[in-house]
Amino acid sequence: MDALYLMFVDPFVQMADAPDFFLQVLWEGLVSGVLYALIALGFVLIFKSSRIFNFAQGIMVVFAALTLVGLYEMGLPAWVSVGVTLLVMYGLAMCVERVVLRPLVGQPDIILFMASIGVTMFLIGFGEFVFGGENKVMITEALGIPTGAIELNPFDGFVLIEEKDLTAVIMAVLLVLGLLLFLNKTAMGRAIRALGDDPQAALSVGISLSQIWVLVWFIAGVIALATGIVWGARAGVSFALEVIAYKALPVLMLGGLESVAGAIIGGIAIGLLEKIFEIYWGQPLLGGNTETWFAFILALVVLLFRPQGLFGERIIERV
Amino acid sequence: MVVQTAARQADVGTSNVPGEETILSVNNIEVIYDHVVLVLKGVSLTVPRGGIVALLGANGAGKTTTLKAISNLLQAERGEVTKGTIEFNGDKVQALSSNALVQLGCIQVMEGRHCFEHLSIEDNLMSGAYTRKDGAAAIRRDLEMVYEYFPRLRERRRSQAGYTSGGEQQMCAVGRALMSRPEMILLDEPSMGLAPQLVEEIFEIVKKLNEQEGVSFLLAEQNTNVALRYATYGYIMEAGRIVLDGAADELRENEDVKEFYLGVGGEGRKSFKNVKHYKRRKRWLA
Image (cartoon, helix red, strand yellow):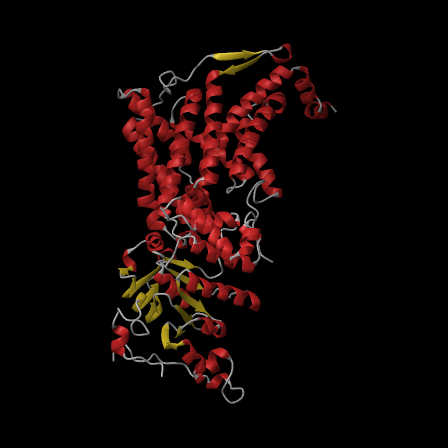
C-alpha cells in the first residue's frame, strides 16, 4: 500500500503542494529539452539527406567547443573565434563530403555508418593533438553571455532562472525556427527534403548531392557549436561533452529519425519527462540519478508500440 | 528498308533524316555494372532536335541503362560507360555531372515516376527548378505553364505526392522535369502501370510539349503500339544491342516487329521455339 501511495499519489500531492518548485523543475527540463531537440535536429538533417546515422555528431560538439576555446586562448577576440570556428566547421563539412561521402556513394547504409565512426575517431585524435586533452572552461563571459539569475515569484514562492540557461533556450529556439524556415521556404531546403525522399530522383532533377551534403554537414557543425557553447557553459569543455549527443538517441527513437517536428517535440518531451521523473519518482524511490537511463527506457517502450517512432514518417505505400 | 549504311550512322552530326540537326547522339557505348556485368554492348542512336524517338524492347533489353547512361545517373548504381561517347548538343556527357547536364537542358523522368512522396505536388514541381538561375518570376510562369498542361496537378497541388494516383504521379514527374526548362526529356516507361486512357493522355501531352515547347523526347517503352504511333523514329533493343531501327511507320509495318512486339501478323499462333532472336546488324565494323 505504502509503495503504491509513494508511486501514484505522493508525487502529485507534492506537485500541487509546491507549484513554484514544480515550475522550477519544468524550466530545467525545458532547458535540457531544447538542447536535445537541437542536437536531434542535426542528426535528422544528416540522416534525411545522406542516409547516414551520424555517429560523429557528439564529437562534433566537443570539437567545435574545443576549437572555440582553443582559438580564444591563442589570443583571438571571442567573436572572431566564433567566426573562425564556423569556418573550421565549414572546412570539416567539405572534407567529410570530399573524403568520406563522395567516394562512398551508393554503398550500403552500414558502410556509411562505419565511416561516420571513422570520422569520430579522427576528430577525437585530431582534437586532442591540436588542443590537448585537458578540460577547458567555456568562455562564457567573453562571449557576453550573462551569468546572473532572475528570480520570479509565482504562487507566492520563487523560481530561479539562470540567465545562461535563458540564453541557451533563446538561442536554441531561434536556431530551430531558422532551420524550419530554411527547410520549408527556400529552394535549398526543398532540395534537402527532396533528397531525403528519393535520392535517385533528386539526382535526376539536377539536385547536386555534393552541394547539399556540404550544406547539411555545415548546419550540423553550426548546431554542434551552439550546443557546445551552451552545454560547455554549464558543464565545462571536455570530451565528456560527447555524451550529450547520445542523449539525442532516445529523442530520435521517440521522434523518428526522419521527422523534424519529431526531433523538436521529442527533445522537449524527453527533457521535461526525465527531469520530472528524477525529482518526483527517481530521488525518493530509486535513489536518484535516473536521468542517465530514463530516456532510453522511455524510448524502448515507445519502440515496442510504434517502431517508426512517434512522429516517424508514415511509410506511404500505394495499394 | 530500315538498315542504314555504316557511314551514315557513324557520322555524328547527322540524324536519321538528312538536313535535321542532331540534339543527342550516342555512339557505340558499352556499359558495365560493378566492373563485371556487361549490360550494353555497343549501342548507338541519334535524336534529331525537336523529334520524338522511341527506344523499344522487352524487359532487361537495356533501355533504362541506355537512358541512365545518357543522363549520367549510372554512377550512383555503380555502373560505368566504358566505351563509346555520348554527346548532347555537342557536349560530351561523361565529362559533366548530372546536375550540369540538367542545367544544359537534358533531364530524365525515371521509370516508376519517382515523385518525392512526402512533398506536396507543388513542391515536387518546384524542386525541378533547382538548377535554374533565371529568377522566381520566370519559375512561377513555368509553374503556371505546367498547370496549364496538367490541370489535374493544379487541383492536387497541396496533396502529398505519395497519396496521389499513379497517373497524377506520372504527370507530376513529367511536370517536374518541365520545370527545369529542358530541351530534351528522356522519358522512361511513361506507360508503366497506367490504364490505357491515361497512357493515351500522357502521350498526347508528350506530343503537345514536343510541338508547342519544342522539347525533344527519347522515350523508352515496352508499349510498342502506343510508342510507335507518337514517335517519329524507333530503335529496337534486345540483350544490350540495337537490333533494328527505322522510321516509326516503317517499323509498324515490319513483319518481325508486328509479330514480336505488336502481337499481330504472322500466320496463326507460333510456338516460342520458333521465335528468332535478332543478331546485331553489322553497322560499326562494316
